[in-house]
Length: 308
Image 1 (cartoon, helix red, strand yellow):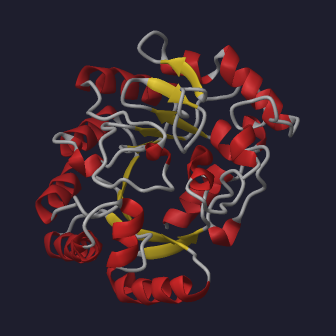
Image 2 (spheres, one colour):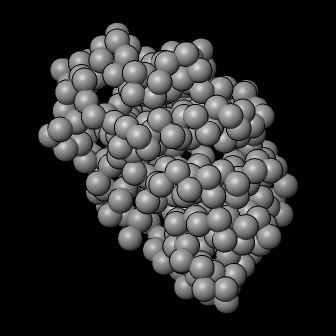
């Protein structure tokens, strides 16, 4: 199940508790920085980059990753990958290169049945829908898009399950949601009850800091990235710096699963200039890992997130 994979990444094993470490098991790569939502709590609000990754850069970097030992490739990062015209081709290439597990997370609104089927046919192993809005009104307010997208995302999830079952694809279908309190929590549980029959697994998430974006939006997030609600991790050292790679559409290697910061403060290397493994153990990365291991990130780019 997806939670087994998530928990394996968010729990830092002994071999990763260092400054110079093996390649991560999992990497997310941003095939597009474009998103069809404008969520106030998302790090996307801090960085207005858009457009797709250069396909030649994608091809080179994923081969370097696989050669270094990366096993799980997420063909998404901050942008919405279903806005990328070549998302299915990206998945097919990753499988050809030899990644055992290729996964994708979507907000669902752009995950049309035809696009989803193309991705399933290309070999997508996991498709997760992030359903974080309780109703159309909340979606319109927070994501700054038409409330009609709320039902559209649900319809697309249901269609994905129908396509998977009808055509016999092996893609697993998952969903996650933010665990709100009070009335919003009640509404979210109603939504989850509606979609549970259509997914292989659903899990809950706390409200993350998103590199300071959530706090800037007036919310009170959890410090750092503690993982999923049923298996929370300590904020420091943050697993994101040790066990998962993150590549922006411009080829920047970020230390943070929430983005590269509003001024690229979380960028550890430029993969247009160095190889993936060189970037993974760059001096910037080593210094940041050292701060995390000492549990004092007050003088690093992570300070704001940890004080959320």
